[in-house]
Image (cartoon, rainbow, N blue to C red):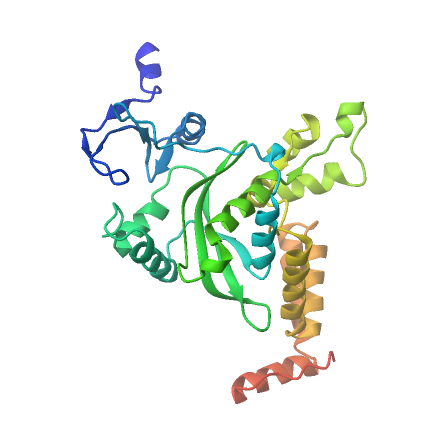
Length: 338
């Protein structure tokens, strides 16, 4: 029993001294621990609370003799108040489209990172980072993490050029920005500050079911719809214990579709989704909605039969014939809902 438990305790190591990449003439040392196995997530959270940062499978913090210049900063988001200057930054970046994506490296992200490093950190510790190094930084992770992309919208409102990225860990009580980078040519936007403000807003958003606190039972379908959305375990935690989840966790467990930093972004993104739906065949969209909503409460076999029936119905319509013709003629279809 003792031997098994000893393997559950983290082991800490100290690096040899080396030149500091931030302060000339100083010696840098780090204490670090490896994150692996089923305890990686709680260990990462505990160490993050103690000032550690994560790099791939390692959590580390400075341990330099006679120097404490490097400090990990955590923001208590519930007590955070936006300043007048920060409001101006949020307004300037109100056009950016925010999207959380899986922790999978792309060449577009790497190209932006290289532009950022060459401009802001030439000669620094990451200045020689190659594509495979970036892939490792993003994808070699034992914890819950994702990338937040910020894009300038195209004229039609859909996401356009990549402006900034943040590799972000999801903690039980908030978010941890592992590494962020942005387009150095967009000086007026203050993209670094914008990403921090955006993460504060995401961590501050919270969802909870509170009726149990008053001895009441949740109603209006909460006990039926919530398990279907987030699973029985998460639903029980929220319904019975009144657990509140923040925006990042709500996104992760499927309670919300995406996060918006303000009402204007929400309206813009909702409009873009509606326009995308309207550009498709209206009859096909209607039948897809029927298949999903009606089939949700059916068995799998019943749902598949419903899908086949609706598919057969669609084959007899003029819209379906128009869609095929337009595809063959390489033009935009003219659907009429018939």
